[in-house]
Length: 371
Image (cartoon, rainbow, N blue to C red; front, top):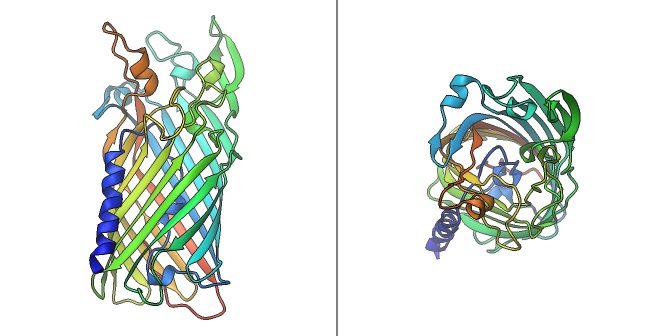
């Protein structure tokens, strides 16, 4: 029976890696589900609440085509720079000692700096660098999850399975000011911003969420989580700078697996693990046409958590080890024997995740530990 928990986590990892077809250009959005607390003290007894907040930031500027970084983009100053800020506010409620539900309310702010969108990169363009902006409410998520094993009898290890829906509440046709537009590059126009900084994707989606843990000793805990968003809608009718090719509504997924060290200092724990975030080339349900930048990022993720009484705060900083902008569906469809197409994407060197949690309970809980 003890092997079930480890096998479950490893099986989850294998599934995610096998499906790692791709992900890229700052389309890595906020995955607060994969930043929460996992451990025997993370259960919500019936009638109790858990309030969470997760802040996420990244600065992307390194261009990749496949595994290869196009270092000349930074050297010549033509790189696209995205600064993206996410804040996910969530509330969870224990319907029973094993069933719980969550509501996630995301807020986003993006700045995108480029030359090619404002007259073109030199030597054929005007060479002016400008910024576009997008902000507001993202796509709200609702989910319900169930701890598979009885928490009272399995405090050293357990795993939960959750299903949810993602609502198209975020703006997927946000606009901003673009310079040097038109045939003569002499117009300033209000146009649709790049897909990577749109607050929403325009589709109803379904989510699968898995999380689990296993205490290996008094001080070490193996834990992991998996999140998959399936978007059946193929395209959403919008396009960058209103140029014709509609935005795809892609699937996304994220996975984490690592070890938590519970220190001798009450409430203080440390985490080290791996993180995989991906936008696939092909969706599980529905078509995969439209414009998307697929790819993935593999990162090593150190973290620290401190909990006292009903409060907990954690910081995790995933550092990229591998980035890959894979060929999109359009790249493959539009390639010919004479012309091989493979678009690029910009990735960040690291991400910053800062989270906090507040448990509203009738009794005083023991500190819970973070992933």
